[in-house]
View 1 (cartoon, rainbow, N blue to C red):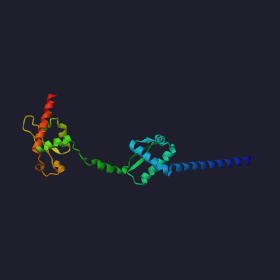
View 2: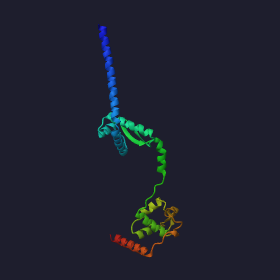
View 3: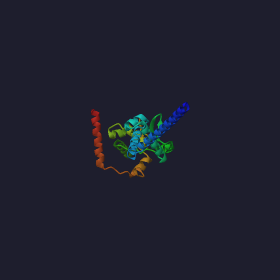
View 4: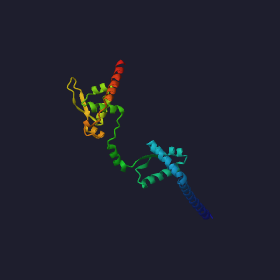
Length: 227
C-alpha cells in the first residue's frame, strides 16, 4: 500500500512538472506572439530607434519599458529583434547591450570610412565681413592689416587670420617702414576659388562704388573717434 502511495505521488509530481513546463512554454510563446504583433511592433521599433539615436548614450531597459508602457521582457524581446535585423540587413549601425542598458552606435567595420570623411577638408563659408576684407586685400595687395582697418573702419585682425587659415590670403613680405608690418596678398587658392587666372581678371569696381565705400568708411571712423 505504501509503495502505491509513493508511486502515485511520484506520478503526480511528474504530471505537475510537465504541466508547469508546458505552461512556461505557452507563456513564452504568448509573449513572443504579443511582442511580434505586426500592427504595434514596427511602431515600437521606430520609437526605440528614435530614443537611442537621439540620446546618443545607453538607455536602461527599465526606462525604455516605462516609456513604451510594456513589460521588460516584451521590450527586451523587441530590441533583440532589432539587433538581429540590423545585423542581417548589413546596416552601418548596431544596438549593443551594456549591463542591462542599450545603446545605438556605429559598427566597428565602418570606422575606416568615418576616418576618411573626417579627413576631408570642410567647405569654408565666407561671411560678409570676410568677403569685404578679402576684397580689400585682392584689390589693394600687397596691403598691411592697418591699411585694411583704415578702409574698413574696424579691427580686422580676426578676419585676416581666418582668410589665412582658409588659404585665400597669405603673408607676402613686410613693409619697409618702422615696425616692418606684414604685407598680405591673395593666394593661388583664391584664384581657383573665384575662377580667375590672375588678379588682372578681377572685375573692376565702378568709380562711384569706390567713392561711396570711401565715404562710408570715413563716416564710420569719425563716429568711432567721437565715441
